[in-house]
Length: 313
Image 1 (cartoon, rainbow, N blue to C red):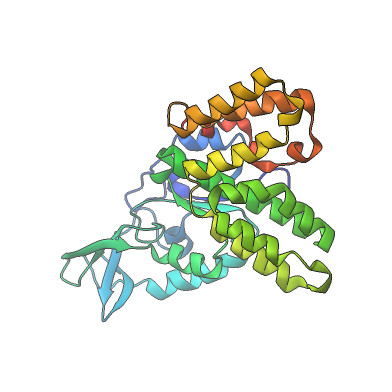
Image 2: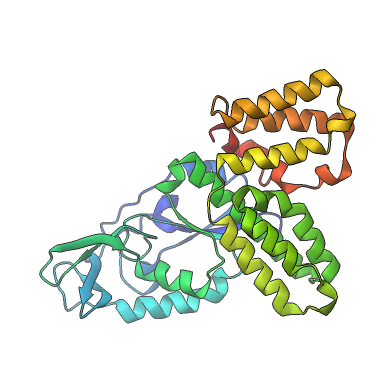
């Protein structure tokens, strides 16, 4: 597996699959395509609806969300969509993420419009039927909408999870052993700390006695890991991690370099510079000192640096 595999709502890739025969090409995917394998999927075409086709929307009927035709309420593709999602889940379990089309009644992740049978808007808190079923079947699969990827912090969080998921799939392909699971955790420890100190402690306790553990421990570990990473990392947590990592170098730095590193971390804490600034200085010192433990930490580069995501957070 040379690159993470991410499914994408096909219209975002420029494929003319929307109900009106158009598309919603998302230019940022051109950047991601340099680092990810992107594979299009259109659930509405997948269930046999043509292009063009009558538009559908989410409708609340007797307390249940259904996919009905906008003009012809007798057009009901709810069960077809749910069955399509269940059939696709095993295939998408071999992927590392899904980028969904926002506002779509089939693909939208959240904030999808929900109507009543008369066509009145009830609320904007629905989830597309395909994505809702998929997220229940694959709770560890990173899912994000293209609109939210315009937010640097949310994009950074999504790509972090995609690459962690990808490394986990590689670990599974090689065969998980107590030693390999412990190494995986060791290399992700500070990445976890940046997202949740509680999860950092809990995952450490979970792996404290691997001799008496089985496959269920690995499954539980990964579930809790991905749940922790789903919460975007906060600035105070990043500061805490930077200070911990600086400690691995401090005894090899002279007074001036230690003071400079401390001051740069402090400027980040105050919000005066982005995360990439203290990280760049930390990596600069690491390139000279070559601390082996620090070199193995994915926190320093959780995804390809060329993505530049930490330049804006």
